[in-house]
Every structure is written in C-alpha cells, then in structure tokens.
Image (cartoon, rainbow, N blue to C red; front, top):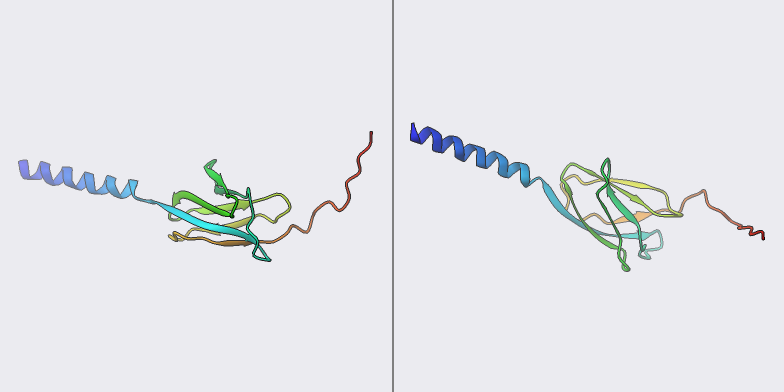
Length: 108
C-alpha cells in the first residue's frame, strides 16, 4: 500500500513538472530590410497581454510557450506573426508598411 502511494505521488510530481516546463526563453533581433535594428518594436505573445519592447540594438527576450505565436508590431511597419515552434532564437526582418503618411499638414 505504501509503495502505491509513493508511486502515485511520484507520478503527480512528474506530470506537474512537465506543465511548468512548457515555457521557453526566446531571444532574437528585429531589423528592417536594410539590416538596421528597429528600436521599440512591440513583441507580444499572440492572444495574451504578455509582451516586451526591443532594446536600442533591436534585441528582445521573452518567455513563451513552445507552441505560441509572437506578434511583432511597430509604427510604420507591417505587423508580423512568427510561430515559435520550440525555437529559442527568433530573428525577424520587418517590412515598411505600404500605408503611411507622406505629408503632414499643421493648421493653427
């Protein structure tokens, strides 16, 4: 009987350990098509409010589920969705948005 209890507790610990170990640390760099780093790009786990912004050198680091999707957004750039697929390094190149203001008119 004691052996059954110990085996049951061990099984519960193993299963709960797998639940906690499903997030992976992801890092990467966000650049434009000319290779220049993009500052302040928002990197969000799609479907959540968990996110970070890229640093001065375009790098970011975020903890996300291995099967999640990351949403990259920045003013003047097209939104980009990248599947994590169990990767720990995700570098992305963002394209300029085709919809942007060419002229700004200020009236007083």
